[in-house]
Length: 435
Image (cartoon, rainbow, N blue to C red; front, side):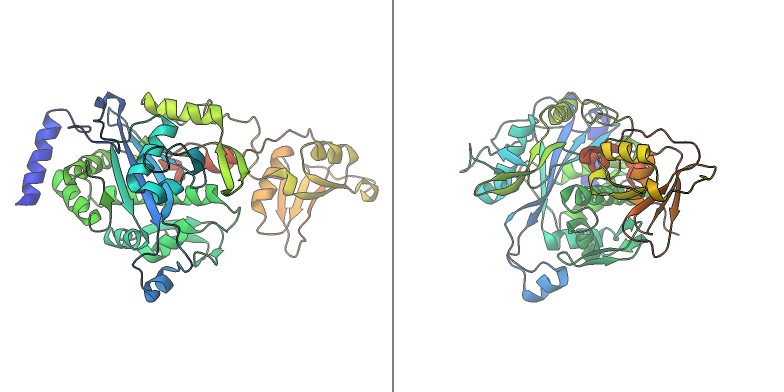
């Protein structure tokens, strides 16, 4: 009977044309929501806390050590007022910001520390202060809550083009597409020390997981009508906590809005960073937001505009590099090409003295060890038309053999924000279908 009542109430809400923003949601400081023509903002956080976990649960979840009782994951979800777009923005946990609300107001620290000082209310107030956006709804879960939520929703799909291992999170999966339990999915989204270490790669994996879960829930019909959405919302409420201004009907409205979106109507981004290792005494290594790019991101959301394709948020380099040339060692058998690559930032050894007297026809050939495809792609971007040749038992240094016609070396631009956190649509972010 309660489910029928919820469904009928939602249908009446839909008929009135006020799908989202119905009623004055209350912010952390008690202010009612402004008009819904600017869309709806939802702050979703995952908490790093071991409180209440038994030794067996810590082993199962692979979360030994001391928890910080802070936010480990922070996603700001913006639902467009016209119902045709959802933007999901990852806010790095180590972002250096000024706290708002609660006992720590006015202090500076990592954004994940706002929760420790003043709980969810202070986390919301701080996000509102640093973004200029009003948060309409707040959702929170912990390690066991996330595990249970994923299991209750039927698991998740994760993917990788190479094996991933991380001792800290306990992740150990092979290359490919995997249907994972809540436990393995937790390890996948928590891992920070794989491939290019740090939070940007981790947040991209989190975004991919969210996109996949939305896609699978939609495909299964879990968000296809008010009754199904209500059932899904009730399932989530077993493992997700909300603020006082968010009830079951709010979750149904949100789920119904998300369930009507195609993958290309969702977009994912990470707040642009200008300093990835800003040292603060007593705080440690922090991340400093790029002033103009992050301001453009929040302005786009405030104006209910898409964030993908906005060059004010992420300028598009003429020749983007997937990885940092400064970490790529190269041997080149042509002096001019070696000098040009060195000017690009590559670590170059000129081997032109050993070049063949008669150079072969064809493009430059890049030989490298299997598993170094990302760096090879960066090097090839600087040498348009180069042939990539993975070579078993090749050492860590790339070898470039130049042909008869000297190539034009292009200047490549490496920007971690573009390489790992640029705004993308959900249909380009998802894992490929499992075979």
